Image (cartoon, rainbow, N blue to C red; front, top):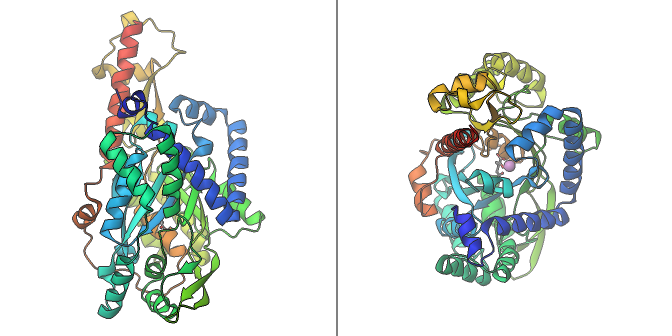
Length: 472
Ligand code: OOG
Ligand code: NI
């Protein structure tokens, strides 16, 4: 029995249900905060509908993998935290919703002074019930070189409390009782939402904000606010190139480059684009208690297209081909070299097989194994075992369906961060990446995303063989 079933059996609201409800509440809040996000959602829904109508094989695949029902509720968000204590409590908050930290992303080499993880559901069923994920970064104040400023930033962070008392009580209740009742669950959603809300009033003075921003825009974005406002929500599209064009024709200027792999027949990993952060009015607190007006750019919109998860071998090939294209470009992709970059990218990725069968056979990607209902072979005469897997696939007894990538990509994430920063600060930090320190702040280890995909592939294989043996 999954933990999901066990907590709903005891009269608790399931973690999947809490996560789903939270993701809807968050989307509703962000739509009122950033109306352009609503427009983006409409555009994505339109494009997805068209793809499903025009490409029935994609519709079929999504039905087989269970992703069809989740498509329109699928999104991720992102937040940036300031202290270890905030990250620990955030982990406990997400745990109530069945979201666990997966993966470690070090953004310092790309000039972004944070390291990050993604909180998300783990097993196939929970992912299909609600795929909501949150890319969560922890600011690395150790990368600020001005000692005085570092101290000031630290005191500002230590003085804030980003969680309501109510949400902390409910987190404790969840941990002690093993779940929340429906009433508590609903209350939890409302209380948790408060942490992610936008605050127009900054608790710090304008000149401190400016000093922080001159070190790095991102430092000001974290230290200058009462809480970790959600900075974007990202719906999932089935055709990101169509959305990129659609944005332009609706007068929403997208960032110059779609991050990730090039367009392919069989999408791999993740492609992402965004529209630029909005400049928003903020008022800063003066020493005399009076507020002084200013502005801040932080919140933006993003869209992504997800493809099959890659094995370590596939991922190594992806990294190699991406690096090759970037090295040939001889700089960071931007408006002025976009066409050339796409050209180099597609040349370089010609070396990456582009049909699911080859991706499977060469162990470049992860797949679900499923009994093929349309197969007419007599199962009693066939060896239904792992050692005969290839044969079973060739004879159409078993079909393979791509396991969708649920995680993020560091180079892409850096590109997304960067496109929203308007500062000409360091292009890379050489401070050592420190997963151990991150995990200490988190209060536990992050899960290895590759191991999770391998495990789900293996589980689907065992379930598939068992079903076939039963049928035989
Ligand atoms: C997070 C940027 C990374 C993604 O989808 O890769 C990201 C941030 O700006 O806080 O959201
Ligand atoms: Ni994002």
